[in-house]
Length: 269
Image (cartoon, rainbow, N blue to C red; front, side, top):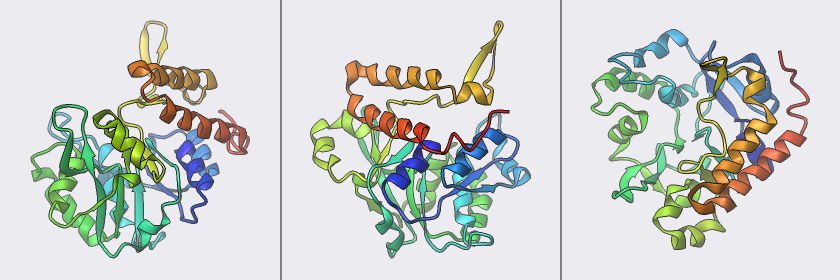
């Protein structure tokens, strides 16, 4: 979220940035960094979020947090239009035009690295949404009966017939490049948002070692510069360096964020 926030600033977007999160899951140090990167913090009702914790792990509430985006029409945010950006995205160019779309929901079609290739389903990593708390409550009433156990599958069922399918320049899923490098090169100049799916320059689920056990990482370990450099270098080497330019893009924004005042404003516990 820190790198994403810096990329939004770099793209000169004038939008408000609101980060939704579960209390008691994110460290105070991380929250400080996210706030320093320009995000407004909005905690989620931890009790209500337990609706997604059932069925032997069939639901992961962390993945369903994005549904709370539909409640941003209420106080204190009172928003009429939002663009949801997943934490594994960065902004390459200004995308403010998405806020003016005359549709209730928009997303780009998905891309897979297996036999499916491009599909008619959309990817929920970037979504243009008209927040509506009534819609959110309707989602809650239906999510348990959904046949798929991930939020993207549920949203495809919910909005399948009324989604505006956005061009891929608004969601440059790295899988697209693997499917067609020529197509990726053709749209790169106009690319607004990049989503790091196939190659990841960051640790998605930080786990560290203590003696012979694997335990959650402390804030100082999560934000350790050498740790991040290892992940960036590793991602750059994947698939013979096929995603090297995109990883270098992320590295550049990460380095700028490190040199900014963001990390100077927060002290490790």
